Amino acid sequence: MLVVAAHPDDEVLGFGETVAVLAAAGIRPRLVSVTDGEAFHPHSRSPVARRLAAVRARELRQALSALGTDVQSVPLGIPDGQVRREEGELTQRLDDLVRECDLCVAPFHRDLHPDHEAVGRSALSAGTAWGVPVWEYPVWAWHWAVPGDPRLLWHRAARIPLPSSAVTRKHEALACFRSQTRPLGDAPGDEPILPPAELDHFRRDFEVIWR
Ligand SMILES: [Zn+2]
Image 1 (cartoon, protein in one colour):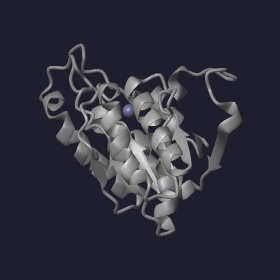
Image 2 (image 1 turned 90 degrees about the horizontal axis):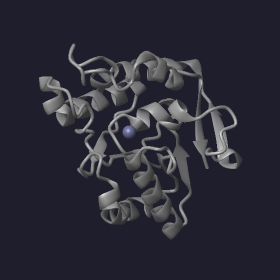
Image 3 (image 1 turned 180 degrees about the vertical axis):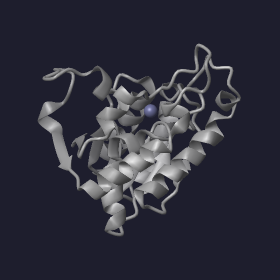
Image 4 (image 1 turned 30 degrees about the vertical axis):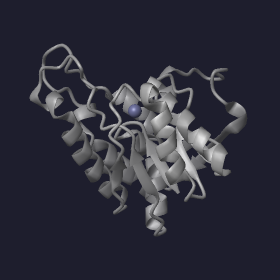
């Protein structure tokens, strides 16, 4: 299994509980971070904002450990916020990874975030080329979608019910993303990307994918 993230936290937000269940069963998926997530907090003057790539890589390592897996995510180093521009190269790189897998899990290609959508399209393209199924997980769709939203792919939606042990591990993993869940400082631009109301979407005892 290949699990692809646009930024180093997407895979935990959208698929972390399932990764925890897989880890408990001894299954080690391959993880890929397309960008380092360095462009979040573009208006912050906090020193953390200037070394966000390193901070987020460390937070992801801690989060994956909290999920109970010893797998490390491989960074692809495509510039954060510019995946669409590099989509051809990304599709080639995912092509090489997807061909060796039985299942690819990637961000929703209509998530209304340009990086998520570009990564989702690349994964779908690579999956189609090699006959490998691609499951898509929503991240920002949880923020903007409304019940019955026609922009979601209801006919492909599947709900994965998850045990309390996995939910607990995901809560611990989410707490590792301090650069995203807490303000970087007191100034404008330091606000958290994932405030508590946003995190609540990802703290439930199920995950949803489009398959
Ligand atoms: Zn993201």
